[in-house]
Image 1 (cartoon, rainbow, N blue to C red):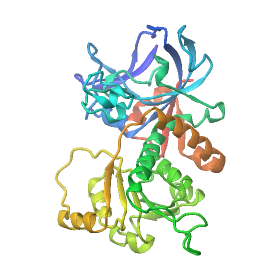
Image 2: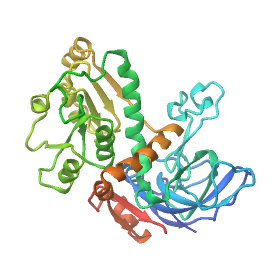
Image 3: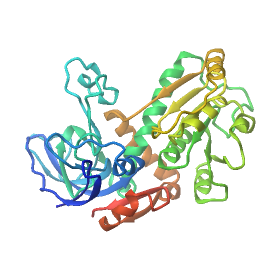
Image 4: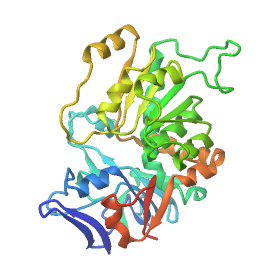
Length: 372
């Protein structure tokens, strides 16, 4: 069967023929892949910035954002059934006895760094016709979400971040005041700023809006634009960095309670961190490329963090519960903002278009390879 793989030693990537997988244990399922999202991680792997093949293999099948259909189930499978639409999780436990996180099924917090990730590190990914995996990694998706279910995995980033945000903000009296006229849009009392209008940023904006935040999205291109229109369609506000410098963000927004970073640009992120409000939280989700050093006002940031009771949080990958939450919220988004959710997927492309997608020659928000 066909798959898309990188060969790090030869610095090549493309379509390869691989053996069709078979069930190897009674709790495994075979999944026919339907859609695979192309993201920045895939592009970076195809630029040979990272990506580790499984032991004994010279290639790595890439892809970690997917939706598929179960076509075969082992005799002991109980959680899922043949015919179910599913989204598989990405990270796998390290298996080391000293790792309490992996031992608790929270490999997204792995202590040892010995985890593997399908399509990224040590295990083949989902950019292929079929996969086999244990049922414990499968998350059932309603049929009504078939066309947008490929967004579940990137949505888990925002879901995990917002859940952690609420947990850490319990350290202070952060609940919404009930003073008349205080709420900003009928129900919001906290203001969130999202950096970036890519798929992770826009899904983060939807998550924050759905959680009751007055939400601003800060990106480069000027309005009017499709991304600005999408933000406005969910009740958010779009700000262009071409028109509003970082030094004026707090002036335009007010006290910024949360910054949700989704661009992986460290200079922009630390400039905006200086605008974070009192008792605010700054959430990093992006991973910058390896570039030269960046000047940062460390004294100013440290003073602000201490004197304004601020906190900084980094978050990566997602656990079982977060995938389930993402599916539930994607359903809620689709009911609340159906056109906006559909607009996140710019286009579906055949396998032959993989090179232009993975080399970043196609614009848009989220491009998808359609396997079926």
